[in-house]
Image (tube, rainbow, N blue to C red; front, side):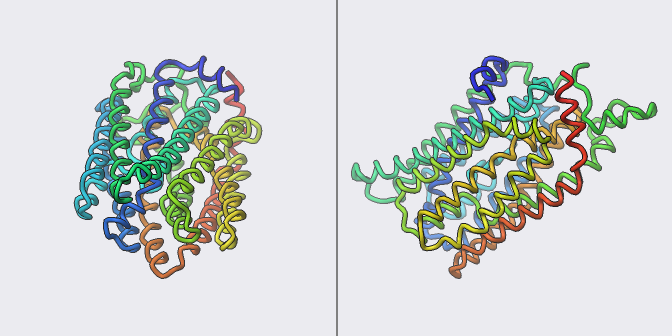
Length: 436
């Protein structure tokens, strides 16, 4: 992927979405580094931390469902602005109070990422926007750039968080808790910056189906039947063909997300803090390198998807990722091999983002795309709520390492099912991308 060429060829709204995901993931990277440590400082047990993260994700499911389902009716820009405002509100509360129930209420009703991964309605709406503003043959590079800048933002957020906490302690700030509050204040400022960015989007970012927007691969095959309508009669319902594909996607993505939920980035920070005694600055540097590794892996991901097709590309990178996850705890108590396995895990786990986006945007009818992507992300978040509860219980009994094994095993199982459901579709998608 030629980064400069992709940047220049993109429209102003797509570039603004790239900048937006950079700011958003930077804020998530900031909060992720201190979230579990912050909760520990305000008196939460490890079991309570697990419930806190799970309930936060439950709130995200409800918020995302409403905002993504009606995004095309209410206006995508308005929905993104509302999401950013809720994000700022949550950050403001975390920076000013230590009451567990107040924090939980705003984490549930607002936007706080317990894993440094995407939460809220942003990802699905932005991806749908880019799909409608980008021809099929340019989507691999556009989505790779979106993933790349987001990962770079997360990397910058991680190292900034670690540096900021360390610097504040060096300048005489009395407690770690006070330092963590400053981090959440920066989170709030970044959320307000995102509000401004969303207000700058043009009318082109709203859904506007044109003749150039053909249906996905499966919809095109169904078009051979003259009785099949172009769009469903009730525009609030998904097309029948879409529902069948959606159910398969949900099985795969929800199982994968269930695995990821057992060992989120916040719990990984906690693991390396407790097992290896790493300082805030050391953790910030570690996760900065992890995010850079993920960013680097996004660069060849578009080429891998073009070469093998989205399904094969996903299998090639995700199965090794699951294996690396399983091996991480077996490196204890040696820090260097543990970090090496963590970096290998991060390099491979991020390479499936572009192939999965290509798969989704090519097999789903454009009319249904925003809602389908929203449903998929909501389903992923819903099952991710389960993992942290058990992670907290295992951590409280000194068996946090087991979560790495569970996570890796579930990811591998999800990939096997993905191959069984969609293995034969790569050729059709590749031919479609090469038509233009």
